[in-house]
Image 1 (tube, one colour):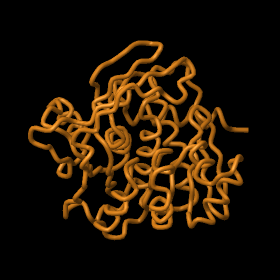
Image 2 (image 1 turned 90 degrees about the vertical axis):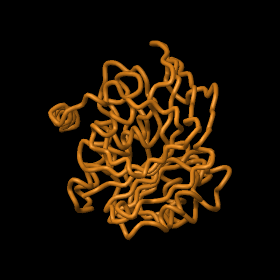
Image 3 (image 1 turned 45 degrees about the vertical axis):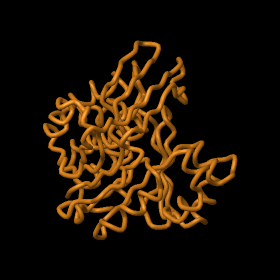
Image 4 (image 1 turned 120 degrees about the vertical axis):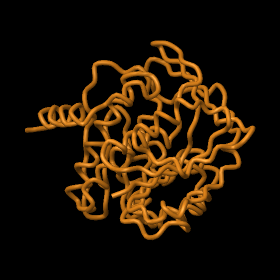
Length: 300
């Protein structure tokens, strides 16, 4: 089954303790689409400028990602972000943000995309995410991401949106910010009272937690020897998660739990090098090998 992903495509400049790269491929839609494409066909909706390198378009197409919904704005410039990470890789310092054509992003879902069975609303304005929902035809599952900026600036719109999606995705600090609670469990309960159906709370290097009103599933992170660049790890997780569900075709508790594991595994590939250098080379054999290793790490 097909996955529809709506989000950002960017050119990133990133500095970590291991080096610096300039104008490399990035953006929530890129990381999540590349990740999901290992499991299912992907339809992408995004916007770029005329300066967006042709080699990146060729890369996405080679991954089997349908770019019918990616608008190229004539004479426009692509969204750019520059950030710097310290040794702990937590909360990168944003040095520069140039929204460019992304500032006026108003996605139109192509007719051939509207029956996509699985939808990932990557981290964009909740008003735009709601507009996307009005253009699709009852997908089997809607996964929605957000960030602290939208929680503080468009809280009311975000709460309306979370009632319409099947799984709401946020990290631990965002869950606490949205709920006003200091602990994760209380935060999750408060967000359920707002109307959420299921929640995934990302814990970065410590894994992820899946919450429904009846079940809780905690998945630790896979142990890695080297982390070079955590940019896009959360989006890669989301792509692996929804891509695996699309491969299964059915949304069951068992499939949701396995999807969390595959999401964790895909994120480990993303952080092993800058941009998509490692993620781009991942094979199905690589994924299954790491899945088997993960099972050994968590078996008792």
